[in-house]
Image 1: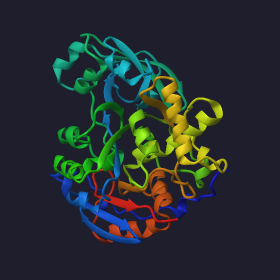
Image 2 (image 1 turned 135 degrees about the vertical axis):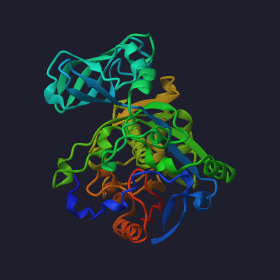
Image 3 (image 1 turned 180 degrees about the vertical axis):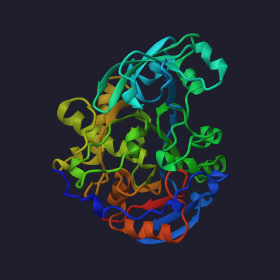
Image 4 (image 1 turned 180 degrees about the horizontal axis):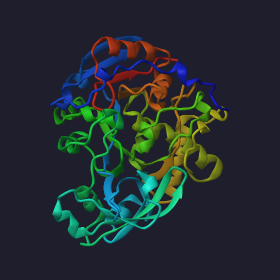
Length: 404
C-alpha cells in the first residue's frame, strides 16, 4: 500500500547563500529553468508565454495569505505568539472572517508553556490606536500540538479587518528574519482573492501584469482554483520512511466550469501553477471515484492513490463528479485533500508544472521527483550550479512531464 521511499534518497545540500531572503524588485525578472524533452535550459520568467503550448489550459491558485501571526501578552508581561491556522467556530472561512465580536481558530502557540489558562491581551507594541479593539484570546482546548483559541474584540469590525490591522504576514521560517512592510505586498500573488492561506502559493509570485497579459494574448485559458495553504507546507519529513509521515489536509474549491473544461479538453495541455494547484487538480480524480463508488465526494486521504489500481478513466471520474454537482445544484466542489504525491504516483490531469525550488527532505521535493522522475537531481544540480535562487522568494522552473 505505502510506497517504500527513504527520504534520504530525496535530499540535496542547499547552501544558506542560495536561499533568497527577499524577492527581486520586479516579479517577472526571476530566472526560469526549463525542463523539456529530458533537457535542461534556462530563460527569464518574463518570457514565459513563449514556453507555453498554444491553446493550453492554465490553472492558478487564487488563495490569499492572511496576516495570521498575532502577538499577545499575559498580565504578568510574558509575550506569546498565536499563529492562526484555520477557523474552528464558525468553521467556514468567509463566515469566520465576517465575525464581528468573537470566533475561534485552530492555532499554534509560541511560548505555550507560559499560557495554561486565562486571557491574553493583544500587544499593540506602541500602536495605541489598536488598543481600542480590546482584542483578547482565551485558550479553549489542546489537540496534540495545536490549540483551540477563542478571540473576542470590540469595535464591531470583521475579524478579517482585525487581522489586517493587528496581524503580521507569516513569511517562511527559513528566511530567518522578521516580516517587513514589503512582505505584505510581495508575499502575495497579484491575483490573490480568497482569504485563508498561512503560506503563499509561491509559484505564482513571479506573475506580473505584463506576463499575465502576454499569456492571455497567446490564447491560453487561465482558470482559478482555490486551495488554502497550511503551515504543514513548511514541515520537513522527519521520519526515515515516507510511509510514517502524516500529510496535512488543506481545504480547496474548484468550479463546475473548470471540471467541464477538463472533461472536454481533448489534446490541450494542462499547465498547473504550483504544487498547491497540482494537489488540488489531481485530487479531483479521486473525488470522482468517491461519487462512482460511494455516491458523494468525501475528502481525499493521504494514501488513497496508492491503495489499488483504479480501473476508471479520468474522463469517467470527472464526469461522475460533474453529475454529482449537477444533481446537487453545486457551482463549486468544496472539500479537503490530504493527498501526498510521491514517486510512483500516476498523474492523471497535470501535464506541465510551474514551480519554485523546494527544500531538501520535503514533501514538495518528493512531488517534483514524482513528476519528472530521477531527472529531479539533474534539474536541482543545474539550478545550484547556475546561480538560481531557492525557496519561496527564489527563481522559478517550468517542468514538462516526461513521456511514459
